[in-house]
Image (tube, rainbow, N blue to C red; front, side, top):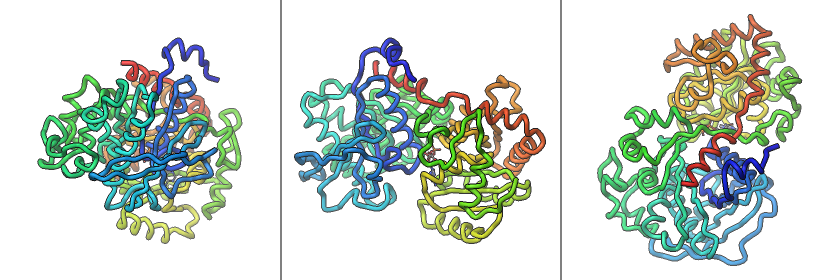
Length: 498
Ligand code: ADP
């Protein structure tokens, strides 16, 4: 139980915060962004702050996860490309949070599609969303939020839009932007800014929104950095990394320029949604005092047609994009078998070539006793894999925070990760003598090479096979650590109050 009274004392008077994002778990989720919106919002609301979330009303939204979904009584108008359009705002409750779903009445049917991202008109879709959300908030007289919290390039344009267009319609709201991944920046043309009502040419300047790598191009994420009151990325290590050309993806100099309004705050996970004792998707519940790994492994093997065996199971749950270290994810197929384990991959692909490549692998191993590759996104099965596996690999090339390693720890599944970004802030090698023993919780490697990866896998298997007592002590210990949002929320509130 959280002590709300102490929340008041520590964090002061209640604030009104509106998160504007493209995803929210569990109603519409592609990756970690969705988890962050859920977890951070819930923690803020538990501390008695007023929290609202605004996301698009995609066709693919899981209606069964929304309570009391109601269509707004009236439509409201928003501007786009010099025309006015009607919109409907739906409102419902997701995991106890108030969520508004924007439903544009627009001939391009921006969100009446199967997928969240990956369309040629993604820029139009999210620019429309950003402008319409601001028209909506401005129309709600007397309900000005204290903080408008933006996430990713999809909503970053709201920062300049607010400062240069909407500001006098609000009562001194502040803009916070979260950078969840510098790999996605929303590069576009000046006419895209014209569409939302800004004069695009005026922003084509190195001190404003001109892309640092491609002259003549507008960069929406840069606009978010320049025009926000504060911006945050999702781990301390990544906050340092993106100040370098290697990780900054062209925006390193802008991040450095605005470093006085910038911080890295390590993500948490929602401790109710990710709870092995109550998980709504798990067939068997367990805790650090009563592990049920063997029962869950049996179910997992059966579900994926693996041989019922006593081998350790290694899992990988990931978007299949180059950032995630796909070569090592593939390489692990042979390596895990050589070490005497079973291997399960649950990966979601977003390009045809990756879908083709992993589709072939999935086909190749479909009747294999020790390997299963699912090219799919399934929340329920992801929970089963997190819970049942002994180890989880995260061999990312870069990783802003990474949540799968944190979820794995919470479920007593030992992470094997490359030491980068948030992985370096959350996983500490059991042999790392510089770290207090009680904080060591997994296996890490540095070099993005097969050799380094094979070596770390070998060490993990050796520990599992030859030190079973120590292994189970480790499993129990990592499950008891705190992975929640308390500490991060304290830091966000500090920023909100500035
Ligand atoms: P990213 O945001 O870069 O995708 P994170 O590790 O921060 O990576 O978050 C990934 C989130 O998405 C986790 O909650 C993970 O369980 C989930 N996820 C990723 N791929 C899949 C998948 N194929 N099926 C189900 N869940 C997935």
